[in-house]
Amino acid sequence: MSKSLGYKIGIACGALLLASFILAPLAWLFLSSIAELKELLAIPLRWIPRHPTFARYGGILFSQGPESEFRKIMWNSFSIALAVTVICVFLGSLAAYAFSRLRFPGRERVLFLLLFSYMLPPIAFIIPLYQNLSQLGMLDTKGALILVYSAILVPFVIWMMKTYFDTIPRDLEDAAKIDGCTHLGTLFRVIFPLSLPGIVATLLFAFLMSWEEFFIALILTSTLQAKTIPVAIAEFSGRHSIDFGMMATGGVLAALPPVLIALLFQRYIVEGLLSGAVKG
Amino acid sequence: MSSFQKREAYFAWFLIAPSFLFIALVIFYPVFSSFLLSLFQVDLTRRAMGTPFVGFKNYAEILRSGYFWTSMGRTAYFTVVSIALEMLLGFFIALLLHQKFYGRGVLRSLLLLPWALPITVCAIMWKWIFNANYGALNAFLTQVGILESYRPWLTQPWSAMHGVIIADVWKVTPLVALFLLAGLQTIPRELYEAALVDGAGRFVTLWRITMPLLLPTVNVVLVLRTLDAFRVFDVVYIMTQGGPANATKVISFLAYQEAFKFLHFSKGAALSYIITMVVALFAYLYTKTLKRQIEY
Image (tube, rainbow over all chains, first blue to last red; front, side, top):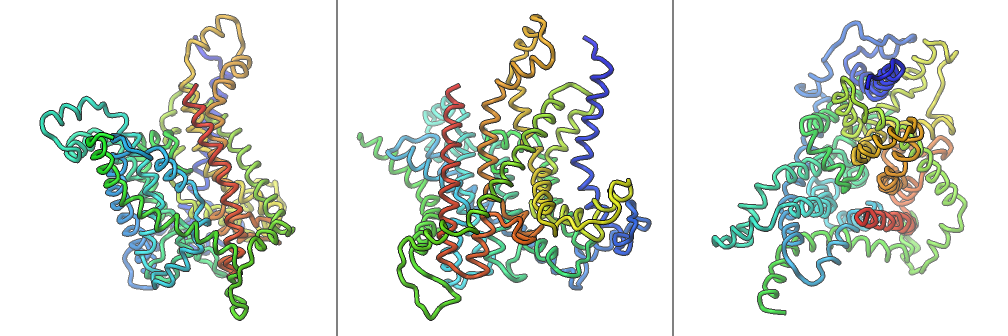
């Protein structure tokens, strides 16, 4: 059946609208990061910079000046997200195995409790947590953020991994057990390799969520020692005299890792998203 | 229980215990002490008064106050308007991407961009676009002749609220579209072919087949989004700080301010408990819709 001309035009218009709806704001963020400040402040505004420059990126990534603070902050974010991911996968995979393969009293109830803890808004526990961490002298440390993020994400990791483990047929393990494999042996030799795509997706989500978390970091950190990118970006946009170009550059750098991850691992990410366990 | 079952149970608990203790310590224990805190009067700005037990006084004060209910109203407005827009736009995008055409794959990948962009970056991006003196929106609207002069979008109550909504809609609509698209793909082709044979037009099939069969997906997305939108904080914090004239002071921003700006810890805890109750209600609805989904 050949499609009518009206249909084709409709599709083309829709596609064009959608692409510009998504891309226009992003393009402007990027252009702002490479345009000279006086061009950004000009009225009428010039959309395409006359002398595009990557000097701001160079400043943030390589210089020793005040811009190098942002580099330190990026490192904070990266090391925190990495530590959280490692902890979550270690704790989460063990528990997920138990929930997926073993029978024990209270199984359903504990699982439900975990899910519930993941749905709790951070405001429900942040006030006493802030007081406790302050008594322990742990405010404004990377350790505190790693601790809190891991605790929030472990239930999510357990839930996702359990879902993936459930899809692996039990016959394979039974065969391995007959050959003399232990419980943990089947976990590492049978289940892990077979559910690798799922584990990768879970890892990526855990990393992305710790990378972009804002509310808890805002409350628990205050200096370069532990501050993360979202906090730095929020501070930057709150200043009175803002270098808009610098703000845009920080934004692009903060967005780059997650955007690359999303595009490179697109299939895993979309599957993970649709499984419904991930927060928007 | 046989000894084999017992051993299995012990082993299971051995695997779960580290995670469970960890979560209990970092989340459940503070959730519980938050409740205790809300029953006392812990107020760092009035240290001399001590920390007396006051029962549910904090809750009563909040529930009787006007600012709480106006803030709830604002949050509800934000939630309803942003979700309505996200659903409507998301539905059209999903319908579009369900067609076969050249470049569809690229467009689907593009959908992931706003989702992947950290919410804080999304917020500064829109704050910069809405900027009163140098913003791209002002520049664009004056250059095409719609506006005569630049406008301070984020410092006027009505447009500030809708600016925040636009930022949220931009970020979340693609995700909603992805969900709805996945829902569309589960509808069997035969139904459409049968409808075509019966002589049904495009709108009739949309109304009679697509819509009803998409309803379960719509339900899930609706509850999930409500859960999220009701807690909106990041975008508001960065774009407007609850202003102008409290026009965007949503409920989670109110709780944050109460606890960490004014240091009224107990009142903040009581407020956050009220928020948690509402969220728990949505979460309950969510698990219920999920269960019904599985029964389909």
